[in-house]
Image (cartoon, rainbow, N blue to C red):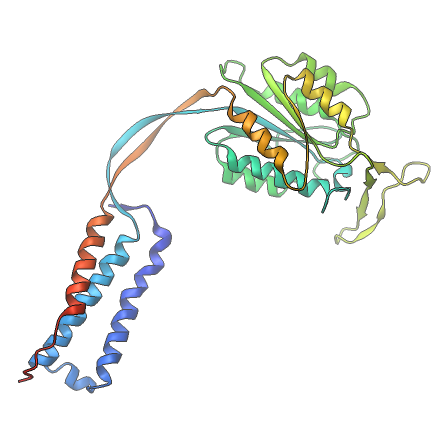
Length: 323
């Protein structure tokens, strides 16, 4: 026997609490010695207690989801392969969208993860360079753990090298896969060359969607101490403050040549809903066969028996003759 809801094990304490409450209730009328006296009235109380506690115990046990193992069955795992390119350049700390671009990006990616059903996802952070932080996986809890540690100190050097991320994603896909492959780029688009557009044109059989983070007006880039305190704003080589702006045209062009679509990040997050709708329409591929356990649920037998025994004990009447 196995259990599908072990998180409910805390409910097993209820029968013990019920037993204590019943005993204390009886002791209000009888001292403890009389309670264990085997005259008829006390035998009745013991029987009533046993029935009620047994019924509650069976009900509590049923909440654990008892089930019987019946063997294995083979299931196909189908889904998309999705690489998420995450901009970790310092400009992602700009606060033109609140609280900042980096935070908004992570929340948007989390929303995407919550919508996936069997698709494999991988993470490629990029700034001056790019690397695979998490290979393709369908373990979304693991993906959320990797997402949590994304920050702007992951890659040394400045810049927004989207091209490096695209190159790495293209190389990492399984080219023999028959289904659609997807690249999601979350960035402010501040790449100072046309490298990403060039690479996007060379990519075949992958759809590229871009999600723009920031505003056209832009914002200054905060700088922080090792203790996390804001100490000022980034300056260029001649001492002028750097104002980071969203480069919509670049991200739109990348999506266009990548047969995808551009979305502008908003506080409400509607753009992610539209992105998810598009992703769900794409062709899934079978990427592996899994053997999963088959179970027969038997909780209902314990639940039904427990309720019946509890009701019998609850409505059991004490005999008027106490001899």
